[in-house]
Image (cartoon, rainbow, N blue to C red; front, side):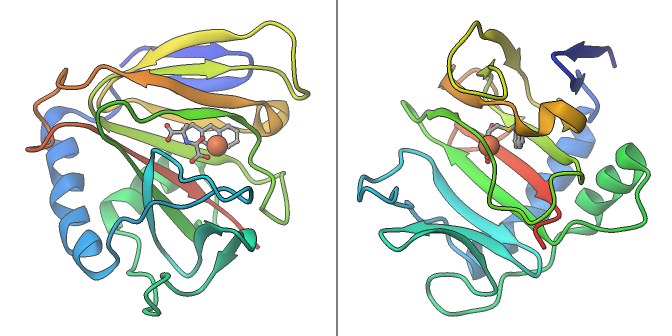
Amino acid sequence: MARLVLRGFDIRKGHLDSAAQQQVVVALRPILKAAPLFNPSTASGRKMSVRMTSAGGLGWVSDTAGYRYQETHPKGVPWPDIPNDVLKIWRELTGLERDPDCCLINYYGEGARMGLHQDKDEADFSWPVLSVSLGDDALFRIGNTSRGGKTESIWLNSGDVVIMGGPARLAYHGIDRIRFGSSRLLPKGGRVNLTLRVAT
Ligand code: MD3
Ligand code: FE
């Protein structure tokens, strides 16, 4: 369980062991059934390669009307609750009294990526964001708080947890690629990333 701090990103390598990872995957199954993954489109109307859904009081959606948090899945149902195992990770690592109101679930199939971006749809950037990686390895790129400049990359593996707080909260970041098939955690392969956020 190595800890690495890169540009203010607090990276806990192997925070979840294989049994804990499997437990989270089991908890995600009914969530994905009630709130299926969808392919969001960017504001410009292009489909993202990453498929998404959410758990919690609020979920993140993106369509031609723009990016926002809302209380329901695009199919109209409320988002399922955030699993307790996942809340436990947040409470333990952030030490905060406040629970996140959104657990964004990103699924990366073969060839999926996420371009460099900032997360700015939340009301208060003083709350940290926590990310849990599950399944295939992913090449995570970290930039600066404004566009351009040098970036650094690090491979995230299944079970890694990253905490973004302080100045890192507004850093540009993205996923360049995944190593499809590098993990056997998910039966169909690919990568799941959970990000826990306080949105309001
Ligand atoms: C830094 N997800 O959902 S997780 C995202 O692996 C997102 O799916 C990537 O970027 C993924 O917005 C990266 C790491 C991450 C998540 C949220 C952040 C880094 C962050 C919010 C602010 C700053
Ligand atoms: Fe992000």
